[in-house]
Length: 91
Image (tube, rainbow, N blue to C red; front, side, top):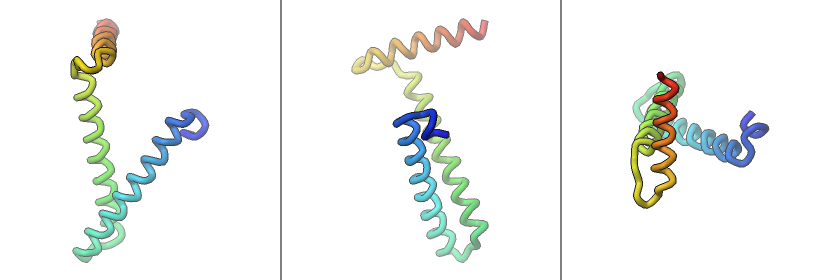
């Protein structure tokens, strides 16, 4: 679906996600095999790693949205407009 609707950004995002999933699986596999675990445990740890990576990215996006930048005033204006719009929608 990303290939059809997202254009180049969708393709990059899809490829990045696949690469990150493969890295998570490889790291989880190496760790679990070293400790004598099973394939089910590898899948479980890989899912946990993907979840935590997603949470870290979410925190980064939220932190970036809350910053006022002197070096990037356009982002600051965008953040202010976005926050104002969100508050007006809540009313």
